[in-house]
Length: 482
Ligand code: SAM
Image (cartoon, rainbow, N blue to C red; front, side):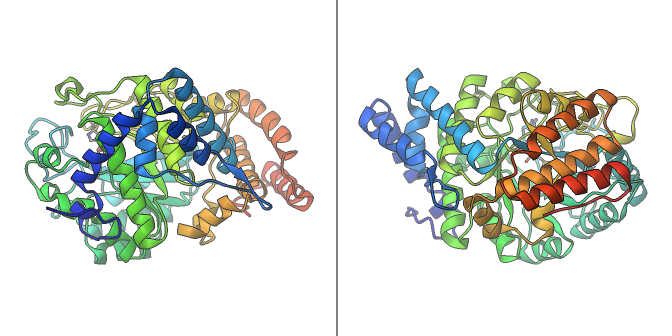
């Protein structure tokens, strides 16, 4: 039997079934152990330092105890600390992105995904480079600067060369004042050589959802195709890092397996990356299974309610305080509102999950990967974020300044967010307001910017930010950054 070893490069040793089962038992036994719970909560709380703030994070065992606890007072404390951590390291900024579906050709048999190979009635579509260009123009016209590209796995229709061509096309489109400045990539597990090519193409984060950490379920949920190989899929982030990509994004598709098992696996995966590569995941996504074409989410009996979903999000926030957290338009406005407080730092907006969807007048459904719950326009999402006390940020500065991997984390830990990310957020928001916003959003936005500029601690930084925002208002100069 495989032995648990977070430093191992073998999937079944760093995501060890026995260790997860023991963790769940330990969590169940200690879920009412007040003394232990208080100690864990204390450990999770941000601590002030001379230069900023630090957070110890939690081990998968500690975080699992909190997740198992049903005491409303403890849950309230977990939520409060999650908000504290979020504000300490990410401030009130929320980074905005959109998915771009390139192709839904797929040779896998994932039972929860409508792109599975046996689905003969879904329209199959792959964008040509001309169509990619048109989609990017439509996305730029909405105001997007950051994309996550999505594709099915198909070595014939969507080989790595196709993905690389698309990335090149995306970066080459400069429409009016528009630019896509960061392309994150969500494609199937691949080789070190291909990850190196993606890195050379200038990608931001490589995102790959584990779907489920439970090996037996994984094999059943992925009965055919290359994705059936549990070890190859689970070890993908190590290959990505070997290929030079130091920003990787984890995720579990909640609803497929028991959430407590998935949660422990997810935190163990983060611990493994830290132990082996010296840097944890850049982001964690928390998707839930949705209705789509021939997929009925009720067919999966591990669906979780909104309260449990919020608790999972907050416990992830406590366990991995420096990791960005993403919520997509799979969730509706109400759920997204609640989760923003508990640690989410990135949201998608104005999303279409169909291949070629952004150039269509009406939202198309024939190639959709899942139903979009939050169907508001980007302008509506931006306004909503501002009205609920957040700064929508279109910033992509860190990765373009080489602040990736642990260099981004040290910026966070040194408390430099307010002198760096905060002004960057305000300047990119001002670009959005000038070039794309409705009059009402623009008014709300500039009032917010005025107020938020005052919060920049360094006078010199504040002055430069102010000057740059004036330049954005009065000229076509764009892309200022610290
Ligand atoms: N084909 C790649 C792969 O296998 O990782 C790319 C990812 S796919 C386009 C994006 C993600 O959508 C999947 O990893 C999966 O977690 C999620 N997904 C698939 N079907 C879904 C559904 N019915 N509801 C919600 N999310 C779904």
